[in-house]
Image 1 (tube, rainbow, N blue to C red):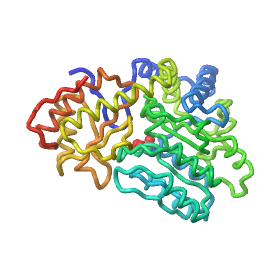
Image 2 (cartoon, protein in one colour):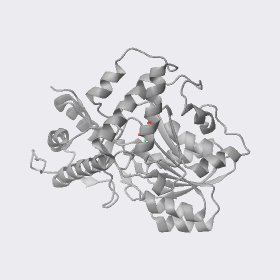
Image 3 (cartoon, helix red, strand yellow):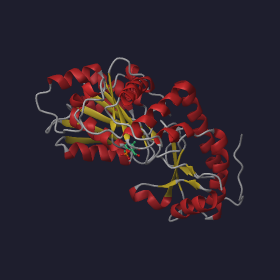
Image 4 (tube, rainbow, N blue to C red):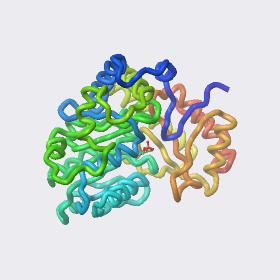
Amino acid sequence: MDEPLLLIPGPTNLSERVREVMSRPQIGHTSQQFYNEFVELVRLARHVFRNEKGRQFVFSGPGTIGMETSVVNAVVPGDRVLVVQTGYFGKRFAMLNETHGAKVDLLGYPDGASAEPDQLRAKLRASDYKAVFITHVDTSTSVRNPIRPLVEECRNAGVFSIVDSVCGLGGEPLDFDALGADIAFTASQKALASAPGAVLVAASKSFMEHLQKREVPIASYYMNLLRWDPIMDDPRMYLATPSVQVLRALRVALLELKEEGLQQRWARHTALGEMTRRVLDELGAAFVAREGSRSNTVTAFWVAEGTSGKVRDRLEAEHGVSVAKGISDDKSRMVRVGHFGMLTEGMLRPALESLASVLVEVGAVKKEQAHIEARR
Ligand SMILES: Cc1ncc(COP(=O)(O)O)c(C=O)c1O
């Protein structure tokens, strides 16, 4: 069998160049070499976010650190916030806000539905909020939210907008400067095609000015953007020891993204998403996300109760392809396929054919035909 292929919704497959840089001898985080690479990494992060006007942060930690960083910097205890909830990660935003003392209202949607800007506008008119938290692509449902009009509503209402694009950036269009959000963040292990362990945060100029004037201290040492600010210009200053290999690998992954071109990468993800949906549609699988709200980075679909584990295990054992079950309550009746990063249509097509045959073999979807060929 060739190398196993990850089609889980992160972490994702790594290119040879990314793997190679991770296996190099250790260097120090205060070395000139690391300084040079880090300065370039921050520049590349700006490029992928299209953040030329605001501040750009890159530091060690999982996507969850990005979520919590956005909360502790935007919110002080007692603030009223609104969480747009279209799946598990929206619920987590609510939990994190509560953990940090915010009063949380939910604009919640049933599984599969994306948020509606008109409903957000109505909520913003009815109450005073400090900030609105939006998930770009909720990985648990594969729902893509219309971030442009949602953020526009927040701007019109004069409230902070925070976008979790952990499962979006690199695979779904996001232009931070044009969007006008206050914070957007992602992590290294999904569409950016690097190893887990780095978080990338874009913050608007006006949000940084707000932070400078904030009277209540930011309730975190590590997640304090004001502390990270000077380190983005000179990583030799010490705040905490960075995950050197992970950051070096991320620089190479972002270089590869730049070489491919941002537009081209978005187009490739659109093709990957369409191919996945086409194959599953032919099988008669029911998508979790409604038509028009389906992301190009991850696809979630319903399977017969209790079969998701069998699909995952058999596909991995017999075909070397990994997919994921659902999250929390939907574990046993949902399968999720991540299609992002360095994946090409040529890599995806045979893997989807294997997935289709396993889905039929274990009775996860109903179809007499045992072999479905991915349409070109
Ligand atoms: C949309 C979204 N937000 C946040 C996270 C949290 O990221 P991490 O697992 O790296 O902490 C994830 C992880 O899958 C995610 O998909």
